[in-house]
Length: 295
Image (cartoon, rainbow, N blue to C red):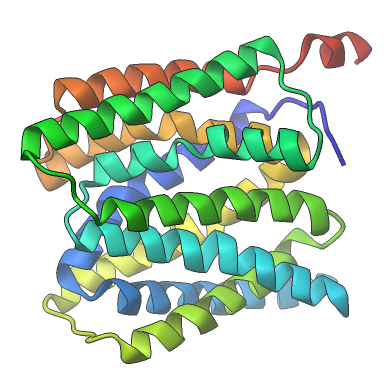
């Protein structure tokens, strides 16, 4: 179902902060533990917390086909996205570059929404999509120029992007009537089971227990619990395409956090990509003129 409501700042700001802080924290985590082991622990703890919240709040749990839809959304949004991002960062993709690639989510989501859900693309949102593509291309081009070669691990990050975009659309199309609390729990459980199976065959290890523990704790609380809950709410309020456009504002804050935490000094290409991504966010989240006049 299409929506025309704008996403309020009180909901948009936490989403941007939670996701932006997650990339540098994730980089610290994969530096201290294997990526799939880290992801499995994160999702397992998050699933336990979200399930407890749903039980205490007496949320209505999905049944029948709704369980399957929630599971598919979880495999895309959680397992594919985080597995791809953490796998890429463990193989050398910087946190700031990862954030910029994932910020292309509005581009892919809006294009798929227009194709599959027949959502209309306004001129401003179309321009936002173009700027989003340019942001990622400029950043990746600058990364290749700085390192002198293409890092194939970026393909894992792109896989994470694809899962994130597809998950948002699937959520909008098939999970709209499911309680957000129980739905988030089922999605996280599904993602945890798949990643745990992969982690079993991974050569898992932990080199810095304290660092890995702090990273997982932060990722669980701000990312898997608060961040995902806010994102699902944003999808319900403004639709997948508009909710995903918020992530174009994540790279600037990620770069600010990654500079002192990880020592990743933003290059000129990254700064230009951030400027383009910010403009893409403003245009991509703008409410259609027709919708405003009807309110």
